[in-house]
Each structure stands twice: as C-alpha cells, then as structure tokens.
Amino acid sequence: MQRADVLRNTLRRIDGAGYKAYKDIEGAYDFDDFVLIIDHVQGDPFAAPSRVRVRIPQRVAGFPEAAYRPKSREVALRDYITRIFAREAGRFQRPRATGKSGVISIDRPGQEILERTSCFVNDREVELRFTVGLPAFGRRIAGRIAQEMFFEDIPALVRRAGLYRSIQGRSLVEHLKTNEDADALRAELSKAGIVAFVADGAILPRESGVSQKPLSAGTVVPFESPPSLRVEFTLPNRGKITGMGIPHGVTLIVGGGYHGKSTLLNALEMGVYNHIPGDGREFCVTIPEAVKIRAEDGRRIEKVDISPFISHLPFGKDTTSFSTEDASGSTSQAANIIEALEAGAKLLFIDEDTSATNFMIRDHRMQELVSKDHEPITPFIDKVRLMLRDYGVSTVMVIGGSGDYFDVADRVVCLIEYRPYEVTAKAKEIAQRYRTDRRQEGGERFGMITPRVPLSESFDPSKGKREVKISPKGLTSIHFGTHEIDLGAVEQLASVSQTRAIGDAIYYATRYMDGRRPLAEILDRVMEDVAREGLDVLSPFPVGDYAAFRRFELAAAIDRLRTLKVRQLRESS
Ligand code: ADP
Ligand code: MG
Image (cartoon, rainbow, N blue to C red):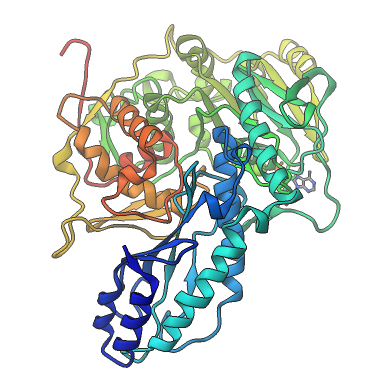
C-alpha cells in the first residue's frame, strides 16, 4: 500500500490541471491511524461525487465487543456512527469552488434504524463509506483544497465519528439498547400469539405528512392500552414493558373521523422496522411479515390469479391469469393482496382511506339490487376469515364506515380522542341485534394462490451505452434501464437507500430466474444471499448507500416493472 505522502504529492502535481487528472488519485493510502481508499473518482465537478472509504483498525477505533455483538447492537452501532459522521461532516461544509466541490457526505438515516452499508464494524476494523466532491475551479483541479479535505477534514471526521472514545456515552448506549430491545420484542410476538404491539406511552402521531419526526406541537396523547388487550413483556435491557398486544386474527380499528385511526395503523405498518430513541415508536413493533395493502388504480398487473376476489368479468375476461396495463381500484387491491400472499405475508394492514369501497363492502341492499351473477367482485369481508383459516393470515384494518365487518371480526378497538378502547362485546351484541341479512359470497375456501415464474428476458436494465443503469429517483421510484418503477403506493419503504438496494436486487434476482423457479423462491434466494454476505452482494463495487430492505418491497418492485413477464405454475402443469 502507498503511503499518504504519495497522495499529497499527486495532489500537488495535478493542482491546476484538467479535472480528468484526478483519476490519478484512485487507490489505497496508509494514513497510520487509518487507511483511505479512493474507489472511484467522479468525471467532472458536477457529476455524482467520488466514492471513498476509510478503514480504522480496532487498535485505534477501540470499540468493545459489547458495542457490536450481538447483531442487534452491531446494526445499531453502525447506524449510530453513520449519524454522527453525517452530523460532523455537515460542519465541514463550506463553499468551496465549483459544483459539488468540497462536500463530504454519508448516507443519512431517518427515524428507522436499518442495517446500512455506510458503516461496518467487526473485530478487525471500522469501515466508513462516504462521498467526496473533489474540488475544482471550473474544470481545473483545486489541489490545495483537496489536500485540506484529505489531510485535515477526513482525519478530523475519523477522530470524531470513528473512535469509541469520541462517541461513547449515554446516547450511544441508549441507541444500542433500544434496538436490541425492539428486536427482542419482535421475536417474542409470534410466541405470544400476537401480531403487533404498541407500548404504553408511545407517541404515534407524526409532525406532518412530510415529516416522520414525532408530533410535538399542541396536545399529544400518549398511547394507553385498553386493559383487556394489555400484555406484558420483559426486554433484555429495559425490563418489563406493557402495551396493547393485537392477537392473531381479524382486528378492526373503528372510531370517528380524526380520532387517530390511520395514525395508529401507520405506526403499526412501520413497526416492521426499529426506531431511534426519542421517535415515540421505539416499542411499537409488528411481526416482520406484515404488509400494507391499498388500492392502486393505474398500476400494471401481470398474470395474477385474482379469482379469489374477482371472477366473471364482462366479456369473459380471465381472472385466474389476470393482466392489465391499467388496473381499477378493486382489481389493483385484489392483486396487491394476492401478490403479498404469494411473497409470504402473514399480516395485512388495510385502511378504508386508501381502499376501494366496492372491494371492501357489498351490503344487503346492494346484494338485492345487483345479483351476484352480475358482480365480479367478492368483497374482502367475505374472504377475510377464509384467508385466516386457509393461510393463517391475520388482518388489522381501519373501518369507520361499515358495521357489517362486526360479523367477521375477532376483536374491535375503538379510538376516542386518540385513546383506544376494546369494544368487541358491544360490537358483537349490536351485530346480533341488528342483523345485516347479507349473504356470504365468499364460498367454502379462500382459493388458490397461484405461483408465478418471472421470466428473466423481461428484465432489461440497459440504457443507451450502459449495460446496467439502475437508480432510485426519490423514495418511491426506480429507474430500471429505460423504465420507471412506480412505488408510490408501496407504503412501507422507509429510506431511499432501501429503494436503491431494491433496484439493484431486482437485477441480482434475475440470476435465479431459470424459467422454472417461482417468485417466492427467487425472493428466498436473494434474501438468503443478502443475509449471508451482506448488501454488498448486490453490487460489483462497494456501495455506501444501501439499506436493508424486505422481501415484500422487492416483490412489490418486481410486480410493478411494466415489462415484467411471468408464467403461471399450475398444479396440473
Ligand atoms: P382518522 O384516521 O381517525 O381520521 P388520523 O389518524 O388521520 O384520524 O388523525 C387525525 C389527526 O390527529 C392527525 O393530524 C394526527 O396527527 C392527529 N393525531 C393522531 N393521534 C394523535 C395523538 N395521539 N395525539 C395527538 N394528535 C394525534
Ligand atoms: Mg383515517
């Protein structure tokens, strides 16, 4: 490996030269206390900034094993170091020359604690991955400023964010313990027959529609569990914790408009991830196989067997292998459910706010007016219990507008001024007293979940001269080759770094598409590889801004690729 002086000399030599001369600094340099690796140099001052890594040996970094073992703590520590680095890097931001010159930046975590490739910690070393805007005046290399960045700023950042003695303290301990407790809690849920848990005292409302920070203005009502649903767990660090445990089964969240129903559901949805201390949802935790379902008209659907919900479309259009370029509200919601089940969902979240009414309910009077032979849709109300019985899939749904659901619910939680009350007995009594007289239209079984085999030919990530061009465009969109995948209705994405990883994971997944393997197995393979080798497996070069994602969002992205072609796997074939 070259000494750091070699880098200094190169920067002196290329000072004032054309930007391309920066290519000469790619390589690894020994800075005594750490190794600096310049992986990729940007093409010009306005291009995506240059990718850099720093490796700090543990003899210098000094992290005790208890800070990065077991895995829950490792993930939290890496997340924490990233946050400190991001904060400190912000302090070095001074206007320097042209374009992105002089900017040092690292991935920016939000409210969730996710495994990220911005930082790694093991027995040997700490590795940080970030980007550097190599400075220039116009297109001329600003070598002096570059020297400052590499020989002053980066070493200072390493000292401030990469050493145990600089970051140790209460807030780090809190971060590690919170993450460990949340993981432990999630692992306890299934054993207790519970699909979701909200701790007493949790703060669920968010600051605004565009901010995931906790609401702090005005009166915020902390969560308080109804006694009949109160459960207690013992967490490794925090000890005893109480809160509302939602059991396996069909649960309704009812209540008047603006009483906090959607807020509770949204908190449960994001409970598949852990949250940072102070978020308010640290102990709002759901089972990992929970998927939010909503209507999504306009989406494309590729050969999904939606016959459990929809059959006999006008003009005999087939619904056992249903395709469309432009789904309706009800067909999109049906497809979203079937695809979630295909990917392995065990809990569905549904909010009436984002559902198709005719998919959710069909009341007695409508059954009288429009006979079943003329209604292709079997409403969710007639399938929700069959789905539970045949596939063991629970549902938690917000329903403020239809009491018909009382007949199919295992329990009913009513929100009044943001406080939950269990009203199951009363709802059942009302259901007895005012019978709906509607006919069950769901049949004897839920119906088949027909597996689909994605065909690799239908995935083309190339664009122009580039063989592979995949990038996220914000949180909810992926450019995949010349196509755009719209994830606007995929509500459990938490970070654009997940979106980035998912985009690359789609391409990675094609290696397992052999024309025979069904999507669920392909997801298994990809997730196994990521679990075993880390997110780095998705890229030929080290990437610093991947975050861990779930199989469900990967499946959702594949399902929404407009070129997707599949073959159905039928039992007979
Ligand atoms: P609903 O779905 O029942 O119509 P929402 O969940 O959309 O109601 O909540 C309505 C408003 O109340 C939102 O602005 C939300 O931020 C706020 N809110 C929800 N829960 C609380 C709470 N516990 N404390 C204070 N405000 C809350
Ligand atoms: Mg609502």
